[in-house]
Length: 69
Image 1 (cartoon, rainbow, N blue to C red):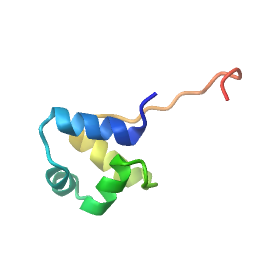
Image 2 (spheres, rainbow, N blue to C red):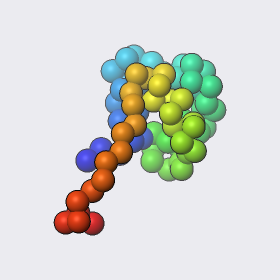
Image 3 (cartoon, rainbow, N blue to C red):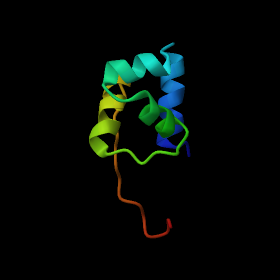
Image 4 (cartoon, rainbow, N blue to C red):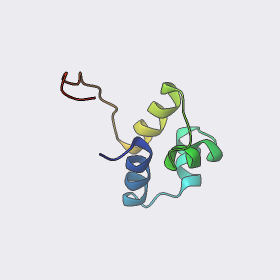
């Protein structure tokens, strides 16, 4: 399973957008975005949603089964 950071990076590259451009478009600091893409950051949900919205992505949740740990 890909991490959120990896999915953001992949989508950004598919859209041919630089990190700097995405940071400006989403109103997020470049350092914050870089950390998120490297899975080093722990962004607030509001920040994450701004990035995802800019890229045309949505965050979904689901209830995991008891078998999954």
